[in-house]
Length: 198
Image 1 (tube, rainbow, N blue to C red):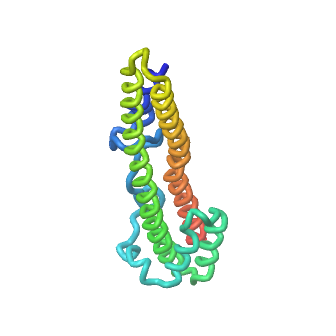
Image 2: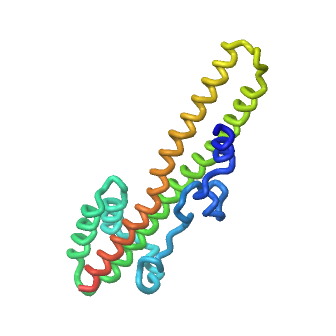
Image 3: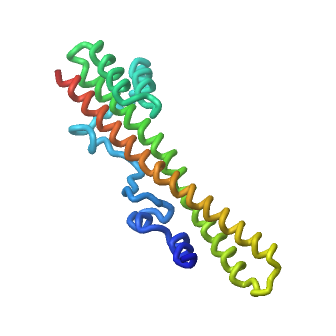
């Protein structure tokens, strides 16, 4: 049983093997480092879309809707309210600027989350290696070894396994964050397109 657990800890899960793009990617979800505008927006964004930071109103709207702490419905409402205030003949351009800003912010936020997930995966491998060493230490103890020493090694191993399992549960949650950011960006893009098309 313990050997099977150690093998699992050292080799990673099947989910980690499913994403060969990065050996540090532990998530079942495919690693997509950068989101593309083409996935969410019909047609190419104009070159001027990169200048979204030059419009203080667009910047404020993007900053109001982008944080994950803002409910998607509230962010959508904020973005559509902004577009409603723009003259109809300028809405498409404003929507493109808003989307460019939202895309940039989503990619920035996702990059930070992905880096954190990969760091956790690296630390998990280190903890798994320590567990293997402690297991080897326990197996190397002679049968007549001091009981206090044996108990100390068993407790150390149990603590490391608990730490590993707790981090693995947290990682499952963290793996959902990039997907949630993608879904949110898609919802915002649809709302912007609908409002700009009216």
